[in-house]
Image (cartoon, rainbow, N blue to C red; front, side):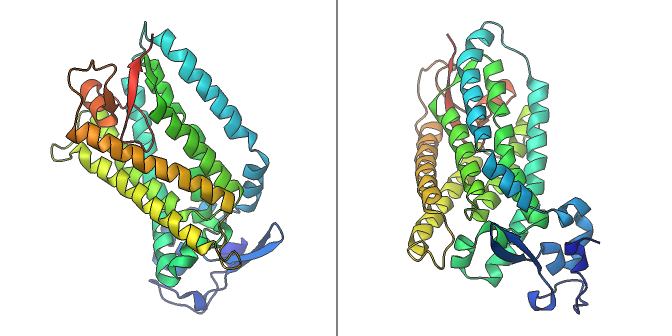
Length: 337
């Protein structure tokens, strides 16, 4: 029996909730530091049947080391990504590739992945938030807050998924469209930041929980658009508001991170990553607000469809496929020359 499963031997007999005091947490070492953790299914025994053995027994330690030792992966991926963005659209603009069905399945895959991630991370975060101070939720190192097990696994998968999400842009390029600043800026920065934060063991469960949740709604919406099954009441502005809320929350959490970081002895944030975090969330908030105004309140007039601001919502309505900007309410595209 694994170490995590063995720790289910405790005096708690409730099937609903077992307080931490009735459990024996797993104790492990990482980079010379000892940490303990409890899994959500241990605290709430009724949820145990919904967790796989892989999730229960997952050991995050070798993966922290893997991400830290392979910083070249996002660098090489970004270089290849840039080459694709520059070289592919001029080729496909003459003969666009029909990939509507593939894109619909891609949306469905990302929607399912995001829903599962949200179901694993959000409950764990809410429990941590109700049993710890807000400062602890912002400052606790991930190995102690996320732990191993299911939450540790899905935090890792979140990091790795940012590599996979670069495929989003491939669908845009195959259509013969050239993504400009907002699109590629988002993909490049979110991959760079996520990898750097995970490698440095920077606290970030709030951002992971929000991203999974927003993506669960967003990709489900794009899938419904792709198969022409979107409910009439579901206005795309709701998606945009949800994304802006995510960025506002991200900025607020970042500000508190700077406040708490004044005392490094009680806060585990990594200063260099925190500065990076402030830049990207500040810029995202600005870009999302700019899109909200241009898309819904001041739409451009008499601009050719291939060059005007296009959001995923527009593209889904016009062509039945998404423009594929992860976490983005919209971006600009121009026809490749």
